[in-house]
Image (cartoon, rainbow, N blue to C red; front, side, top):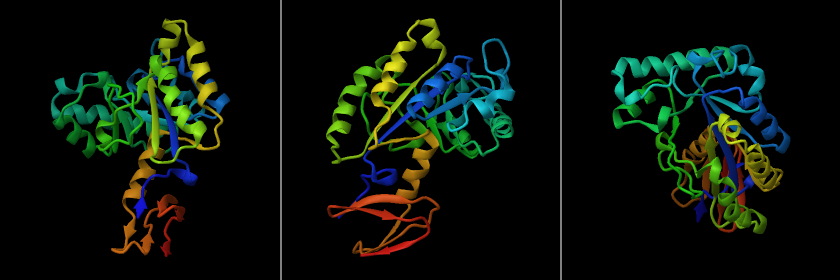
Length: 266
């Protein structure tokens, strides 16, 4: 039996961080992430770059190097209150500006205020967005069934509590099921609450583990899609990977790598 219970390099655990608004506190947060080898996705409002406490446009590429730049709409409106054309304008203008600044295609997003509707989802999908993060926490570690309504494990205020059961599995190297730990928030909250030690302690606790994949949101999306799009023979004796991403899975009790663009025979 084939099971999709492995991430990159055959690992069973993945951690991702997600921060909104592009405020200047991102500078300190990125330093902490880099210190502990943790990757983050940063959802930016391009219309506010260089305004008040937001980062400057000319630092986007260098600041977030090694992480992911993602959409958050150009001006952070309630998307459900806008006409259809304005929803699309907010997303496309955000994408166009961010893509020019960071030099790659931007395909992810988080909903401003966490507010959306079925209509908003469909409009955003037509703008080339492939995943969108909500704000409600699950306190669980499951992969999303729908990447357009991706729910995080927790806000960073609860990250140390949520880390305990996750790290217990990591330390035991338990591989019965894949576990995704997803933390979200706003970097300026650490300034407002004077608790930078919280994220420092969290990163120290969860970082540097050989059996954890530290990934951005889009890396997780691309990997899961590559895994789901494998071509598998009816008797599971042949697996073809049409994607450009190496994929790992288990077949019976063996961890198997299916290289990008290749066919594996059993």
